[in-house]
Image 1 (cartoon, one colour):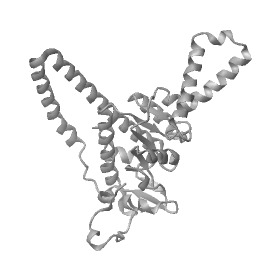
Image 2 (spheres, rainbow, N blue to C red; image 1 turned 120 degrees about the vertical axis):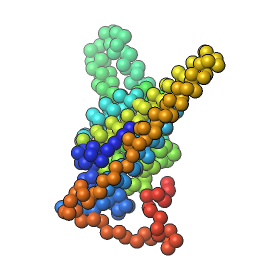
Image 3 (spheres, one colour; image 1 turned 135 degrees about the vertical axis):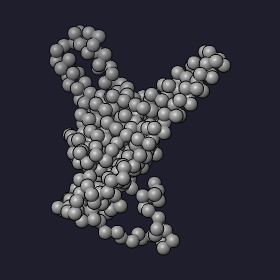
Image 4 (tube, rainbow, N blue to C red; image 1 turned 45 degrees about the vertical axis):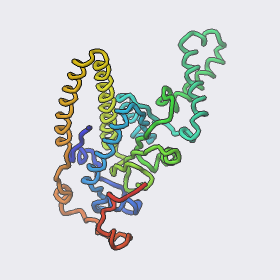
Length: 307
């Protein structure tokens, strides 16, 4: 599974939230404290919840399912496109078209038109048309390319979406929830975590933080796809070589299982205190008694949230 460390999170500035006057009270459980008028995100919780999200993405990819990367804010556009292409997934990085998920049939018509125009541009049909008509078609092709390039080859709805900034991509998140598609999102202190299935508390504005999360999620997807390929190869070998190959496949499977705990131990939770990292200048968020019934008061909110 993709490994992420506390040092990487600190260097990328993941712990910096928004100003204290711009916050969502539902993010209180993920906030460590406040410093110089800015909320500080609890990176211990970020580490733990990122691992849950990473494991979920890896399991999906290992089953051959689709994860759609979404990030249309300017600082996220390049990172989202590069990392999605690297792991063989699809992306939306320019503009989220309303109804892209809920009105999938209509969007597919636009995708079909884009493919048709691409063929016309490459097979010489443009040369048979008047110059004015070619300019008009080329303008239409560029417009469709900007919005649909990342999903041009996606022939069905995604099985999950990975979002940078659930506030900015609110339409995408709501469409996914309406269709029951799981949402993995980087959530800052001004966002609503109740709309997201797999919350990753962190800075969603810094370029380094965005690229860090996008690259690690892409790594998880790539590892899941590799696991699927390895499994298919093992199945083919077993079918082709019968019992001897089946025994070899079992031995290879045992080797893979032995190597798994090493990765798990390498990505274990780091025992680093936020007080040591930030020094004495950070004012810790005071604990507030939950509104739950007395017998549920001792249960941590992170473990008991439902969707």
